[in-house]
Amino acid sequence: MALVVVTGASGFLGGALARALLGRGDKIRCVQRSAAPELRALGAEVVQCDLSGDPAAVARAFAGAEAVLHVAAKAGVWGPARVFEAANFTATAQVIEGCKANAIGKLVYTSTPSVVHAGGDVEGVDEAAPLHPDPRSAYAVSKAAAETLVRAANGPDLATVALRPHLIWGPADTQLTARIIARARAGRLRLVGGGLKVIDATYVDNAVEAHLLALDRLGVGAACAGKAYFVANGEPMPQRDLVNGILGAAGLPPCQSSIAPWAAYAAGATLEVVWRLLRRQDEPLLTRFVARQLATAHWYRLDAVRRDLGYQGKVTTAEGLTRLAAWFGASTLPGCGSSRSLGYRTYK
Image 1 (cartoon, one colour):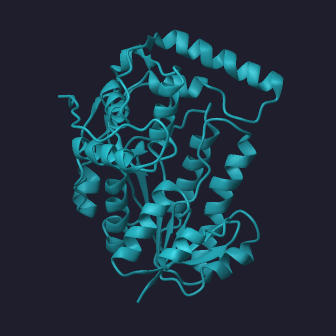
Image 2 (cartoon, rainbow, N blue to C red):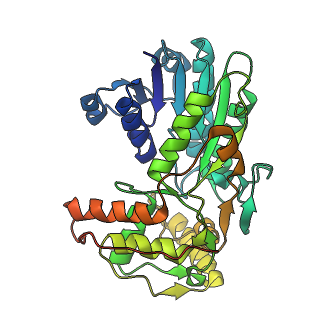
């Protein structure tokens, strides 16, 4: 039985990948900072290791593996650039070296579409789009640099591929889903420009599907080797449709409040100044980068991932929202509503 290393398995996507791999009978080793008793309970081996720390420790953590799914990353829109660089760029460089030191043949890297989002509308672009991360986002800059390393490392001994899942959401998501709901409950949720800009997000099971396909199809000389792929549901729609679908799944009313894009950007700029003056370490309620993200369209062509990996995106947005509603209905989170039928309007 092959051993697969998964980094970042305590996170939303990493955890879903770990469960999927175990569910199909793979042997996995989760390499991460935390002890992760929940992963051990599922049958995973857990090795505690700082991927940006001692390179020799990283190499030892990968010993005996045949493939690596490198999902671990520092996400976010606020914080010192050096922290993102260490967690995303340095750690990835050491993951690559750990693969080489152990003659590991496959490396699947989780990147982000933010590597091509410079701040304007991104509509229907494919993988030919140049890397052009928004300089306001240390996360996007560090991920672009790391993706470049991964693709350059592809060769006769190590086959690599980078996946760019867009806006992953679903049950137990602590980022997109949780933030939308938390802000709505606090009365702070606003749709920038009415939420009319078009996006294409990724239900978590579809992100898992893409990663498993990449893992299975990757190899020296494979069609996907050395390449990057956008991943999403393939259902571009106005932001407000997804936001209100998620709110409905949690038993909350749709968001009716809107803010003009220029006002959102000005508010983000002001809050950044305030946070710096106060030397606050937490994330501002809004930043210029987030304001730009919310005020622009971002959806991508999926021809390449469908062709080279056989990706389908089997869970539609409607089905994902139904599953999310069922999860909230069964959860014990305060204020969660019960399951109910949900609809959304797909952008044509």
